[in-house]
Image (cartoon, rainbow, N blue to C red):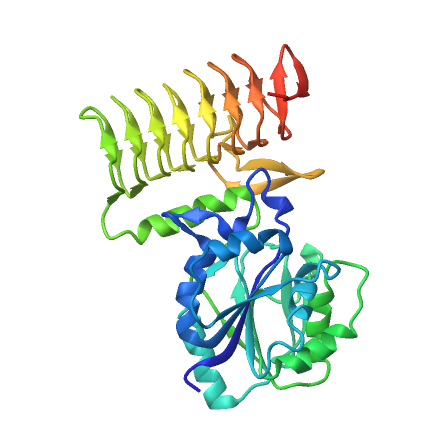
Length: 402
């Protein structure tokens, strides 16, 4: 076998944990949506590519110049999660198939190892495990006499069955057989897909696994965009990649690797270091942008932006700054829902949603997220996340009706 028959890319997630950023499959790196990059790289490994998207993203996916061998499958809104995405492919895919998450970035040369193993051993399923030294809230391989028998999802830290966590690189020699198992699998938790995998393993199918130790960048939380940005910056064919009509003042300094897209302006005495600058941005005089991601049409003026993500059309007033280091120098935590999540980043600034404005001399503390279309009045120190469509003024939070 020189190619897989099918690759099924799961891109139908709602991305609520990615807030205040949106549409993580379509989040752009170096001027190209992540999903398009994945498609372009995967097409050489498969005869057919299928992409499961939700109905709200059909317009977005149609804007991508898809390859001829690519087909779009709309996820049934009544079927949620990974299980729902795969079930939406029922009766549309036949033969062997590899299932991947659209937002998991790995070295796709791993798929050559899959093909070699398939040709050599004809397994019914293949999974990929990655060794971890510290606890990771994911699925762990459990073995019985060196045979893979189960995936244990999010075990207690003191009860992990092995040091191998499962990545979503799942091969099935007969995808219809797995979908049949998935259909009759039920779960009270959001793990129906994982339980179906276990039900299949309990049928004593011929299961194999590969250990993968190269890079793995999942795009789940907004701060995950930063390591992915750094990964892509390292792939540039020059230390500093400039788009068309970029204007850089003679007194400005650019330290690579950096990407600066079309029509952006870097002002006098500005410093841009190891960062991604989108289209039509203005990095005003005396601003510093360090290890940060800026979308399109972002305007700065005498600001410090470190280890942060600013979505499209964000404005920072003069003197506004983003803190990126805790006083105790511990890794920065950020709130997701009711919980504070450890980002495992020693330096992490803020994430600011699209169309938001930060007033002059305002300060954002490490790990803060500012919602979309939100205004922060001048001089404020923001120590908690701010919702979408709010106006923070005179120690009050009111709806932004502007």
